[in-house]
Image (cartoon, rainbow over all chains, first blue to last red; front, side, top):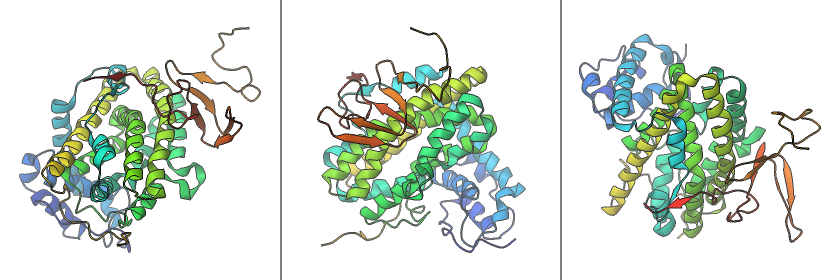
Length: 337
Length: 72
């Protein structure tokens, strides 16, 4: 097996567990995390980066890393310990509903006078804040809908047909220039960001890593297919109104046509996806496998929980006049003085 | 005549539209919509959600503005 010739660079470690995983990827043999894996903060930088790097082997890997490490038993054993810590914490902290309909109904009500990140960016977002938000979100949007594709072989009938239809739309309906990940890269260009996959991994905060890790965790485990479907439903139901505000924020800041289009496209697309996911995917899955009800609700609840944590991280930094990023993201490539 | 059939008799001959309770009208795409002023807009999405509440800022497409709003 030869190492990947291209791809993102390995990130800097954030503690002993992520250092052990990165060392294994550099060819250093089985990861030696010791007790650190069993005691790491389940939402902290070290555990979340270790999981993120381990999962990335299933997506595009890293430059200079042997792609066969994707199925390395020692790495998978350590990953399982980290997944267990993350899942246990989520079950204790995020579970709020036992039924999917109850969890979704709450999301279908728009709070008047909301104060989340999209509201703040719509009202007063600066170009720097929009760039910071996009750099963080790029960890997901440059692989938008990829983690969800893993659920397709685990579904059948209505759920499979509905999920495949929505994914087809996410992947551009057969046109590469319309792939949502490409539309996000175009947004990044408008905002003067580097569009290279994985470029902002070092900059992203633990709260953003946790959101992507949640999707990878649910997507890679067939046992968690109900949670993956619930997660996807929560994203699609909440996306349209948030995208409306973010499109307004981009317009207000004069970010450019591609930046605005990414979000206006999501206003319309996700108004459709919401209906298909609720009626075909969630209802279809639960008609076929009613025992997954609590898993679907868990996927919805955990998504809201981790989204709230991410939003609070951004708003706390901005209130303090600081950046939520761990390292500076470099000069504005599009800025014309 | 009203029918209770769960699927159209011949899906190729009949296009089914779906009315969402307190929500949009769903129609299989691609579609063109001629608006009251004569302009024609189009969408080639596999499924298109048409606004019924008239609150959409992207009319005739649904933008979820039909949702209930609450003070919290």
